Image (cartoon, rainbow, N blue to C red; front, side, top):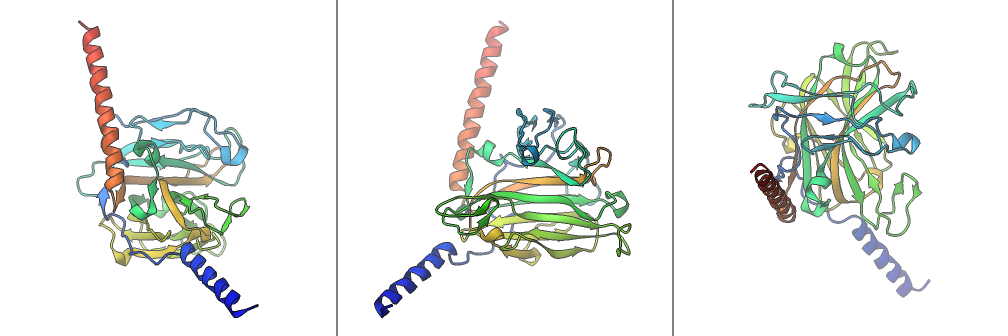
Length: 346
């Protein structure tokens, strides 16, 4: 090989590496930027309810989405097509030491996970999806630096499902950059394939009834590393309220945060930054929550409580414009409906 040819090869290789992994962006702490109030929930609406469309979806397990899917009356939540929604979604008084001013939160629990009417006797999960893309009308570029957070109440150990393993997930829905060369869920990627993936934070429990476990305890795992493996990041020293967050930056990285209590997250709460599955994120589509349990038809999952799931965007001009357009259209539709109703009653 000539020196000239070797030099060209090296230049092309280096350029490809920089294209695949841009220079690291600043660390965005969840809660930075403009809050997109059109997405998320505070659960203070007295008419809050989730409308079931049973049987639930289980496309991931058996290929059946079973449309139409369930949704919240305020259209801020939806059942996902891959898995069904949690069976119990109830507004309750906010547990003690929650967010100042919060009077109500959402209790999330499931029993009939997995394929409807079929008990698999293993761990299955249901999903509660924040309707981000549906309400905004677009996914969000990671260069716009979206970030999301939630407060989660972890009940005392005696209220957890008596099982060691994953109990709760706080996840995001992303699309990889088209030039990714990582390994996807259906084999190796080639060409400009944009792959969907779902990184997040899992809450695991160690039950004292399990072998070699002396007492109940819990810890956080992140999904995932470059191979997509979950790995432990933090021991949970106290139960009660926790704040979990994720942010997404222009270099395609996912940044994970967690802290006990309900105070705003800071850089000190940073757990890890990763390219899960070796993917470089290009677009943020949504975030969602998992409730896991033993799918035996009778065992309820651990009763977790959610409060104030929020979406923020640092470079928010485009997203704010889309939301403003949606709100204007909604206002026009409401005015037209009111006018029609007034006319009919004359």
